[in-house]
Structures are given as C-alpha cells and as structure tokens.
Length: 290
Image (cartoon, rainbow, N blue to C red; front, side, top):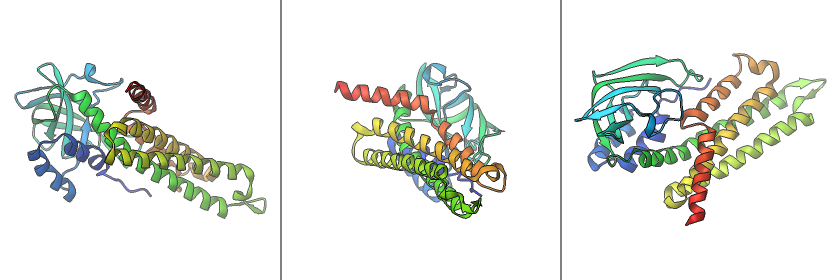
C-alpha cells in the first residue's frame, strides 16, 4: 500500500515559494516550522474549471483581509497555510494565509488518488500578508511552478521506477504455458519501453535540478522538459504495469491501481501536459530570440 504524503505540496511548492519570494521575516517564521513539520503548505490558485490565470481570479485582498473561494486545493484538507492568488487594487498578487484562522472554511472533496486529499476553501475576510512583489502574481507563480515542477518530476520518476520494478518481478514469477511470462517477447517489449521512458525522464529531472541550482536562464526550459517527461513516464509505466499483471492488476489486491491514480493526479497537480507543452514552446521561443 502506498502511504499518504501530506508534506509533498509543502516541499515542492510552499517551501520553494517562501524561499524564492518570502521576506526575511516570512522565511524566519515559516521555514523552521516547515522543516519541523508544524507547517503544511498548499497552493490555492484554481477557482474552478478552466485554464485559470489572472483573468479568472475573483478572490480579493484588501487591507490585509482575503475574501473568495478556491477549488480544488490539493492538500487543502490538511494544510495549515496556503499561498493564495488574489486581486489587490485590481492587480493580481500572491498572499500567505493561515488556514487555521476562523475566517476560513473548508469542505473536503473526493479525489482520484484517495491518499491525497483536496478541499474547497472559502475565505471570509481571512487575515493575509503579501508574498512577493505587488501586482506581479503571474511572474511569481511561474517561478514557483518551475521550481515545483523540477522537484515533482523526481517523485514521478520514482513512481515510474517502482512500476517497472514490480512489473519485472511479477513477469519473472508468473508462469503461463509452462514458462515465466517475462520470457515472452510482448512482455519484454513492455518492460523495455518502460525503461526507456523512465531513463529519459530521469535525465530531464537531473537537467532540471542542475538548472534549479545553477542556471536561472535555463530553468523555464528545464522545468517544462522535466515535467513533461516525468508525467509521460509515470503515466505510461502505471498503465503498462497494470497490463503486465493482467486481470489481477485490476483488483484491490495489487497496487497497480494506486500507481495509476497517483500518476493521473500528479499529472494535473501543477497543470496538465498541454499547459506544460505550451510553456516549453514559449520558453524555447524566448531562448531563440536572445
């Protein structure tokens, strides 16, 4: 059984946002609490169906108070703090909100991956403080998403590797017509294809990690590449792992369905594949013009 990881959003998104955009006071207050596990953070950006973005934001911030609704918010069911996109004086910005405040209401939502919850968050004058420069939420959010995409790609590579591992083990143990099914060419091809995609995703993740540490200029391209490759590898490996297991792979007895659910939910956690393909194209266009 795959255990819940309530701190994934904290590490990938919340901590990186505080590191990249937070003031010295915000970093001193939050980073030690994040490290100790006292603070669980999430990103509250979506306000329902659609591509999102500053044009769709209806949440408002005024005089240090936030009002509006965000749905769905991954880990919003357990988070103690949130980074919220909102308009202040008509300009989009990012705001830190303590979700334990009485002016915040949560409603739990069903999710594809039951080990990772989501919630509808309703703010009714909740205390907030700005994160990063005023009126610059799009650029700030892009920076957060790029950093989070690199870190999440390693989780996706790890999930894809586990799918390949258990598929190989099962293929060597399961016998049909007097032979291990792993000896049949059709199964060998599935395992080989999984391996190739996993290695491509791993290489892209390493490129992203390098850019995250050493090259801001390359980060946009590297993050999008890591995100696309990691999403593709995990989704493909989860499906092929289920196929290798055959009929038993569709039962609750096996973890195949958990990997498939997690792969699909991770694929949407920071925006779906079309969103990241477009970001990759735009980043490559900017690079070619420089």
